[in-house]
Length: 395
Image (cartoon, rainbow, N blue to C red):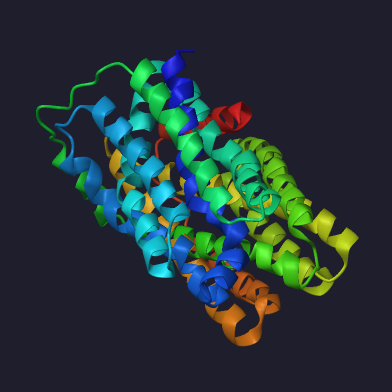
């Protein structure tokens, strides 16, 4: 496989580490800047909201610009934003440093996925997506551990900046010049927005991601306050969470290939079960080790479930547009979940964030009985299911 595909995967690793790496140091930032944990949670929420707003528009505004230039621009902004974050002297400055790269975040995904698909098809796309999985497995625990190792929250951002810098150099050296398109037609792709089933699936995606991140955003705080784990132990738990997520992704791809509807409902039921288990057994150290392991295995599959459920009936010419809507839905759900979890944590305590997740999952489970396409052609279904399985096997 071309080196450019692996460089794009490294770039994906860098931007996802930047987006979610803050999860592991939220309690530290809360104490450092004298803000509540729910206010600190806005570092994730604001990033996600910005991505959600910019996603449907940013690519169309830059269609005529050289793609290599845009990729390098995105990574350079991520390098600088992490450095600014590390040198922030107040919470407002840190928030601004987080929002700036989020504007260009969807641009990297849209371009890199398009390049990967053109070069190696589904295998190329799955390789780029591997960067996302590895960011969950290694990136987030690494940045959390760096902050704990050096007893300084800034170390987390310095590490993220270094990762993005390496990716920037790789893009500069190994990505060929890719001129932008002279014209961008295809207005018929917007016709898909008339389908009520698409909107039902997008709403279900928002609720799914909100459920996942209302608790995951504050997992570090939960393990610290309820399970009484120290920084090193929490880093290991996050690593375990991500590692099991990779396994879960692979299993989820196999299950989705066989039955999308059944797999989606099973995913929701299992995630409800693990949240309830964490609520009642959160104070038991050994029990939480097993719960976090199973939680990670189930949690990561939420992205894949939502993607396949939504795109399996979408015409090929509208896939890029629908993927931009999915990116927005993902990030709306992430920001909504972080916001709701923060509010509940602030007023009732971090222990009760799990109740928010369970409630949202129940709503999503009810919606699942109305959210599955019935009008897709068999060829479209087979191609999308084949992609899901291929992608997960690669991760």
